[in-house]
Length: 81
Image 1 (cartoon, one colour):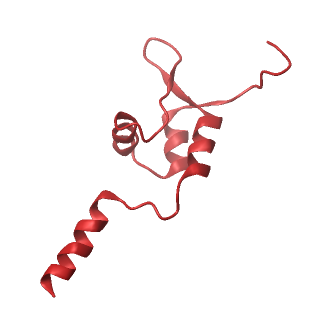
Image 2 (image 1 turned 180 degrees about the vertical axis):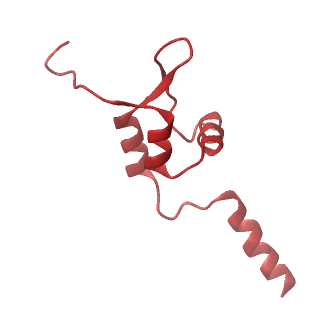
């Protein structure tokens, strides 16, 4: 390992869920859509996420992110008026 290579921790799914506040199904759906970091394979049946990938994802989240259902809800309110 070179001096420029930094050590990074890996996080298993329960730790990722606790950090980001999303459910397992939401994490995997967002991964499928390219909206969440993909894990690395640790073994044949185990994966983990690099802690720095999760921290970068969290810091890059836009606080004004519109979730899929929010436009429909505001649209139905205006349609009813």
